[in-house]
Amino acid sequence: MFYQPGLTSHGLPFDPFKSCVIPRPIGWISTVNEFGQHNLAPYSQFQNVTFDPPIVMFSANQDTTGNQKDSARNAERTGEFVWNMATYDLRDAVNITAEELPNGVDEFERAGLEKLASKLVKPMRVKGSPIQFECVYLNTLRFAGTPPMGSADVVFGKVVAVHIDDAVIDSRGMIDVLKIKPLARMGYFDYTFVDNKFEMVIPGANKGLLAGLEGSADKSSKELQISRAAHPDRKLGKSSI
View (spheres, rainbow, N blue to C red):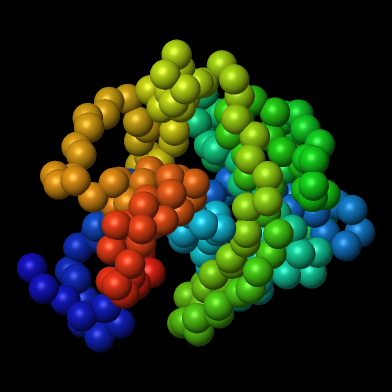
């Protein structure tokens, strides 16, 4: 099949677009507004952007009335937000917090979730979520779209604090993903979770490349210093990992 979005019909009973980019990690974003009211909502258009410094983003379409969503507005006005890892065990709470509700409603309370105080920012963390990032707001890229929901606010934040439950760190000092069972968004009304994994290591002896894939700023910097010492006359560009 072939179709041009916005120009020609795909001819299917359900729109296939969101089912083509899968699975998508969920940005379960907690914020607080200028009046101290708490908000929690999931966004399946979420991703880490870079690792040194660590930056994440979430993309929030407008609500069904064409207005900016609370998460984006709160992050912009207060300068802070928290990402909470969504898991299979918390799937029902994630789903409840996706409901479109009036401004000021506390989704933590509506979903029966306990709050945990953050260390450096005001937005609360989700108790029971195994990993949380405390973030300071950087900027928003706004993409205009077809009303009412098409426009999107892509919100970027710098991760200033990371919380990881000791129970999900294995004997090697690595996060046990299979124990966490991270929740991910598919298309339509479908979700999935991580219940298997396999390893692939890029061939070659480029330790700097592997450090970048790991996301280790310390190892990446160390390998750069080693490379410069071994090849003082070589001009080294910045990594594109």
